Length: 204
Image (cartoon, rainbow, N blue to C red; front, side, top):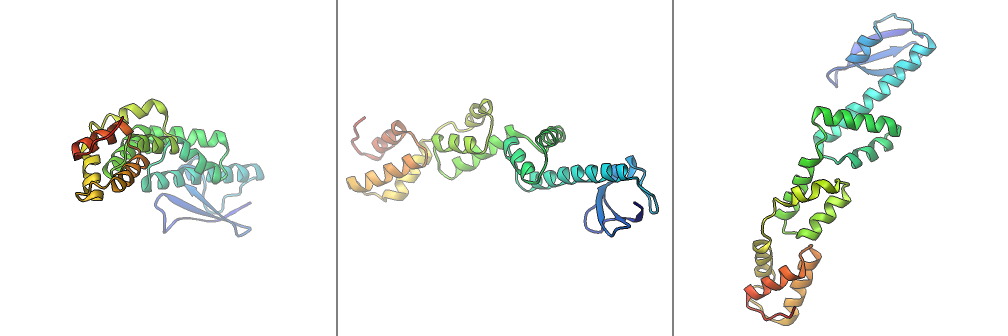
């Protein structure tokens, strides 16, 4: 199979388009251009063409992984799931994740810290934060370090009660607010202490 034309992509820097004699186009990186010594007019054997197509596919997976991670941080588990959806093999997905970690694009420790900061800033409690870390596949050994950023929930709970109750001491309003705090991941001892600060008598 002959390469009819080899030209740089106008859309993606570092990508080359190899137009083959059957009209198909291979999108390859500079690494493939060099390692396969590609040039216009080069004839590829069936084996070389297959190897080039496979290399181009793997290169495309790496590029898509980088683009994804630059848009939205991921855990390793999330990235593996996405790569498998893109039809990578499990071995390829693992190798790509290893490479993303080496390059600094995949950083689960920082991702865990960002998740905790984000949900804590939105007024969610410890249980909700742990649920999010679990849901996103963050390794458990990174949880405590990330959670250590949150020193005291009392201000967040007090602000929530003030906003919801607006001075009300009606037991029904108190119960609705307390249940809402529990759904947001705060523990009952924290909620009870906040209610005492608010001036309510509570029972443990």
